[in-house]
Length: 349
Ligand SMILES: C=C1C[C@]23C[C@H]1CC[C@H]2[C@@]12CCC[C@@](C)(C(=O)O1)[C@H]2[C@@H]3C(=O)O
Ligand SMILES: O=C(O)CCC(=O)C(=O)O
Ligand SMILES: [Fe+2]
Image (cartoon, rainbow, N blue to C red; front, side, top):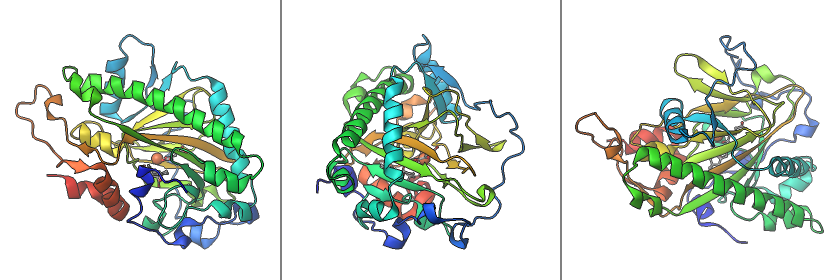
């Protein structure tokens, strides 16, 4: 089976099968104790269901560099519109994702993530760090899902592969466009940086089945994403994503329209920006009657790249010292796999 370099970098931190295999949500009438969280406090501050709570940025705006830079610097998350990716790409990818998650558990188990792997069907990787399981099942793709798709649909795997590969191509192009805008903001005079990275990618299909007790279950536990950028698509009728705002607590990111995409800063961009861009802490709530599916595309540097904080970024501050030591992407992922968010204290000066 073909393995990407990104997947290889997860090999040294194997997980146990009991942490990888989701329960059979089709069969469940009641939230089992293993998945029962203390009351998930739905922040009372945000009554306004329609308030997107993060900046909405038009990619065609003349001052797009400033808008994106400002959003990255303050919240670490924003929504983009006018990104040029036709709606069909999201609709097709979502319907293929739903087709996969609708399969019976015995089928999905055939492509379960291996204990030392990173692709295939299973729980979120962060599962072992929490004492309760999440109301979630995922399918992770690194480059091509061909081997897994053949297992699931021996006579009909091509459509799934085509849709997922095309989706990744579109997201890669968009990520690169965002990356250039961000570099432009960080270091307008350092053109050499533009060519100093090669990139890697992963696509995560997320499924949050209907939950009989949404106040005591979590779709995804609080986490930050690891790579440079995440581009998330959520459909317009199913909210669920929340970010942690310093002064307001957990705040919902309302989907504004089907063609808006959520972009958030990941840990490696946080480090590269010398801590200027926060990698936003987020979680996902579940719903009693809606089965939510989301598509998360992760864009980052090749695992052999080295990330060094760009210190000349902070203008007007006098002498600027790097806040983090340089770190190889592989090493970072491995430290995070062992320590989750405590990883920052391990690489901070
Ligand atoms: C390239 C990536 C990015 C990963 C790990 C690996 C493959 C799967 C991604 C996710 C997807 C679900 C949330 C997350 C937190 C998780 O548990 O697995 C993500 C994680 C990260 O951003 O750290
Ligand atoms: O489903 C969502 O809204 C968020 C998914 C997410 O945070 C992730 O895949 O890392
Ligand atoms: Fe995430």
